[in-house]
Length: 338
Image 1 (cartoon, rainbow, N blue to C red):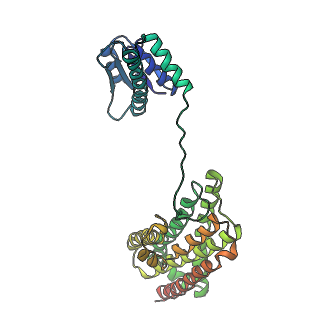
Image 2 (cartoon, rainbow, N blue to C red):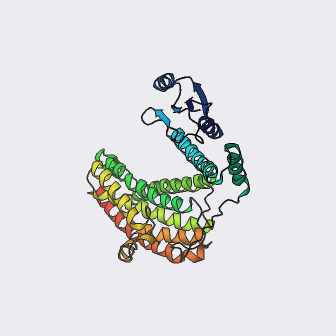
Image 3 (cartoon, rainbow, N blue to C red):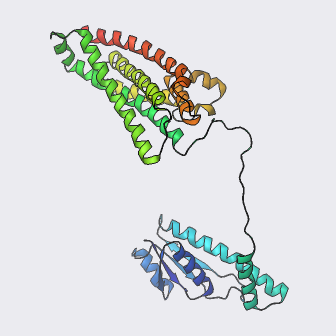
């Protein structure tokens, strides 16, 4: 619990600041002089201190000075609380001074009138309305948009990062030893693909469950979400296998994989919603699988869509999966047989 050292806590301004600080949950420690308060700040027994000038703010023509002290980088919340309290007190004091000087009332009556007006006068009601059309259709909760984007970004990025392990199996001779065994090449390719596909699915499932349990993210129709995630995981797996089959060492795979994962994710709308892109950029976004799965999630999450509403997006992801998987399978067979 942060503690504020106060010199002059028995002054009118000091009492108001102390009340405001304690109302915010901070502790207050009184000091007799500024030197002892500053020493407490240096020794870290208090986080910050204030020295309030002993003047009556109503009777005195001069402003009351409040000196705030803290170590560099500390006492930020306390300073904000003190500033807010001083600003609120300044309004009341100016009102009292005005009543005394213009209205001709005494200080006690002025204070009572200001207190009465604060309690009786209705506060300002603020109403907020949105004009124009929203870029996003349907209702968007706090974490819905970010959760789907992070699932897409990290599932693809993680799949690309596994390409380095595929290269290591060749460099360490694991692939060669598998080839001299009775295991058919087809089984080796299918096994490698299936293993990485399951990793991508588990990661996506973890994100879905974690965001649903901790942040209340609604992933929409279960069948629709399962379909788009399953196909996108296959796209990610195929891209990772293709990258691992074409590159020569795991250092290349690490650098290029991160670059492609982040670059394609950004272009596809996994970092910034593609609705915010210029029209020309959105055309290029459609050449990434990220665009199509995020478009499917827009329908599932924000308009309560079902599987039938995202069949076109699932089909486009399927095209990416078939093309990438075909090329990746050919490249991987060639890398382990030559």
